[in-house]
Amino acid sequence: MASSNHLQLLDGWFSPFALRVKIAFNIKSLKYENIEETFHPKSQLLLQSNPVHKKIPVLLHGGKPICESRIILEYIDEVWNSAPTILPADAYERAMARFWAAYIDDKFFVAMKKAVGEEDEEARKPYVEELEEALVTMEGELQKCCREGKGFFGEEIGLVDITFGSLLGWLGVIESMNGRKMIVEEKHPCLVKWAERFSSNPNVKGLIPEADKLIQFSKAIKMKRKPAASAK
Ligand SMILES: N[C@@H](CCC(=O)N[C@@H](CS)C(=O)NCC(=O)O)C(=O)O
Image: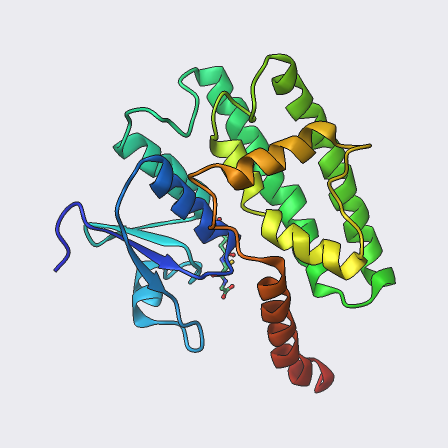
């Protein structure tokens, strides 16, 4: 039986969403038990804890499940509310952080997932273009922060940085598929520095899976799906 403060994470090493929670744990210096989800089949613990979406990550706090990565980040920040904080103290800035975090998931992640799913370069092109558009938008937003002397989308790593930065590993997969970098000095000078700063931050370092490992993982998933697709 879990004690009321025991923290468990239903994790998947490849998951950008689970990565967000691990970064938040580090920011708050929280100890947790990592439970790697098996997926094939999904564990009883996952099905019981997230019966609606049946997805990781799930945070179990004293046995009580909290689902959806951005909701988990906000929960962690509310329960362990001393500094460093993940959301800004100011209500307007908090609303803006939520806006950009939602933009990253709705626009950037969706295009990224579709791009990773397309082996053919021509089929991948429209999604890569969507990603490029979103990168220019995020560069514009980050430039405002840089002008205010901030190193991240806030003073320190916060909701927007975690939401966006957790996708860098998978962006590396698309870069490898396309044979070129997507965040480049000429178009995204602030994002280039931000990505370096984010990845080397002590709360993040070592957590972003290597692109090569993700590429192998993505190939294995596509192989599993192929027979089903050709049977249609
Ligand atoms: N919106 C969710 C997305 C979570 C998600 O897509 N998790 C994936 C792993 S990266 C998953 O569990 N997929 C299993 C499935 O779709 O059956 C969040 O932010 O937590």
